[in-house]
Image (cartoon, rainbow over all chains, first blue to last red; front, side):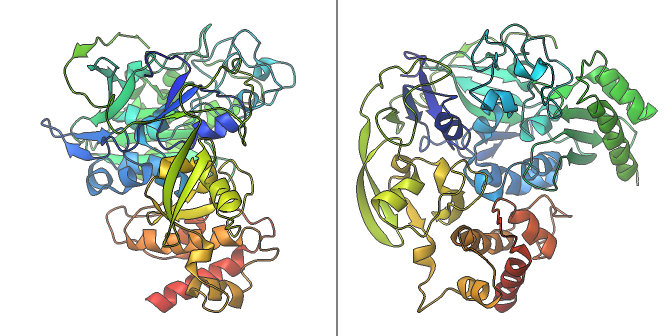
Length: 301
Length: 217
C-alpha cells in the first residue's frame, strides 16, 4: 500500500506528523495506521542486548527496568525530550523519523530547501535567526539539526535499525548509516526507501561504565537542545561521546573518542573539526566543550 | 561518515501488510488544510470518513467522522464535551490533555479514528461541581488558576503525574533511576512542564498537587 503510493505515510504516535499536516508542511494522500500490529515489546536478544519494537512508546522505553539499569544514557535522553503527554504517545521509530524544528522549515512563508527543494535556505540569509541551528555536517543548502534526544543515545550505543518492506524483505541498518547528510538534497533525511517500515531498534550488550546525557537548552524543561552530550565513561578513562543539537544527525566519531584521556577540549576539537557555524551559533563549539568538561568532572567524581 | 549500504535480506516475516493496519485517507473538509506548500494536494486515496467507537467517561459513543478529525475536535465539536480546551492545537500548551486508556496525551495531536475501542477520560469524567475529584477540590482550595482556560488540562495532567511517579516512570530530574520515585516539587515541576499557564498560577497548582499527594500518602 505504502510502496505503491509515494504520497502515503505510516502514522504511529502522530505527534510530529499531525503537527506538520496542520501546518501544510506534510500533505500525505493516505495515512496507514500501523498501531495494533504488535512491535510494541522490548525483548532480550541472544547476544545479551535488547530488541526494542518500533511501536514501543518513549515513556515505556525510558521506564523499562533493563533500560534504566543497563542503558541509563538512553533513559536520560528520552526523559530530556518533549513532555510527559508526548512521550506517552511518541514511538521509538517515530522519534527517529521526526523532522527538524528549524523555524524556516516550519514557516511556510519562508524559503526552505528541505520543505520545498530548490527554494533556498532562509537560515543562511542575511539577518536570519540561526542560534538553534547546525554547525557541522550541514551544507550550503541546509543547516537544520535533527531534533531527537533519543537518537543521540542510540547512536552512542551503536544501535541498529531493523526494517521491512512491502514484499517482506528485511534489512538491518546501523544507526550510523541511517541518516543522510543534507548535501544538495536536504529533503532526503534517511536511507529508507518508499514503503520501508522500521520494525525494531536493537541494542548490543550493555557497555557498563558511567552513562550520562546532558542537554543544554534555553529553559529547564520542554525545549529542544542547543547542545546535548551523551557520554559513556569507563574506569580506564576510555569511552564514547555523541553530540546532539549541532548536526543533521547524531554526531559521533571514534577518532575523537580516542582523545577522551586528554580531556574535553581535545575531544571536541577533533569531533567538531571542520565545523562551519554561523555568527549566531558559533557559541555551540564552546558550549559543547564546557558541557563535556563538566560531565567528565562529574563522572570522575 | 562512510555510508555503507546495508543490503536487503529477504525473510518471510509478514509483519505488516494485511494485518490490523487500518488505512486512513486524508482529505476533504475539516481542520486540515487542503493545499500543501510541500506538494500540490492530490486526491485522497480510499475512504475519507469512518465510524469509530469510543468509550468516553465510561459511556460508549459511536461517531461517524472525517478521518482528519482530531480526538480533541471529536470531544468538543461532536460529543460536545467542551471542558477539554483547544489552546495551541500543536501539542505545545497541554490545554487539550485527556487520558486514553489511563495515560495522558495531547488530544489535539491524535486522530479520533485511531482510537477505536479506547477509553477516554476528560475533565467531565473526573468529577462534577457537586462531587469534585480531590485534585479539582484542591485546585479550588488553593486558587490553582486565574482565567481557568488551562485548568482542565492541568488537572488531567496533575492526576496523571502522581500516577506516573507511583508507577515508577522516571523524569528528567530523577536522581537515581533505580530507586523508588519520590514526589518532590522538582519532580512535579518537571513533569508538569507540558502544561502551560499564561496566568502564571503555577505555585498555587503546586500547593494543590502536593496536598492531594499528602492526602493519598
